[in-house]
Image (cartoon, rainbow, N blue to C red; front, side, top):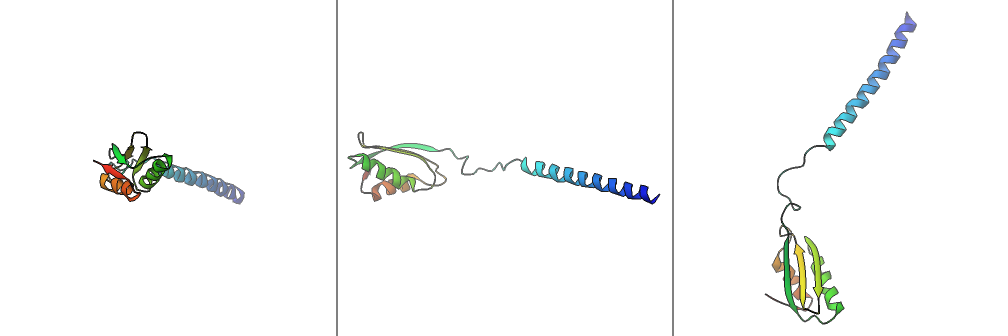
Length: 115
């Protein structure tokens, strides 16, 4: 009889371990599949796409300088400066930066933005 009790307890421990593992995995799965918040965040704000006319660009180095300066700002998705047509194409998130900051970053590098 004592042997049966020991075997029963051993089997009970195995089932408890399996059940506990199943519960932990279920909770993990539920936690990972929770819906994200529906409040607007930086990713859901529509980006703004602008082209600036920039005076003073004469070479590839000028383009790289403007691109580097604007890319230092938060929320910049794209910067393409072109000295041949004197433009700077910028796509940015208005929740993180604005046109004034972009113009200031360009002018800080010695160029003039015509609005």
